[in-house]
Image 1 (tube, rainbow, N blue to C red):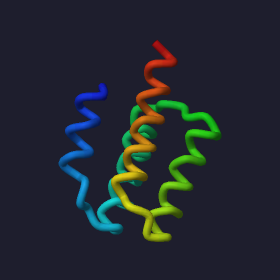
Image 2 (cartoon, rainbow, N blue to C red):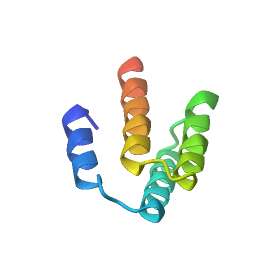
Image 3 (cartoon, rainbow, N blue to C red):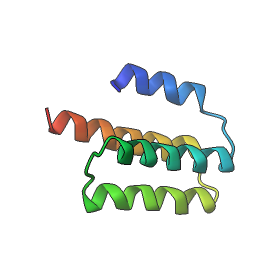
Length: 79
């Protein structure tokens, strides 16, 4: 995903519910696992924190933005 794809994805999902956000975060981590991408402890913690923040009624768009930017940063760092 590049920044444009991320922006489009976030735009499409800006009004998702708490439940939908949790499912989305879980599906992202599942896809990462399927592709056998090794995440750092810090990156894994960000997914755990995301679920907790969603449970505490944080805005899903903010959580998704943070997660996706973390993954983009990782991708750019590894290139």
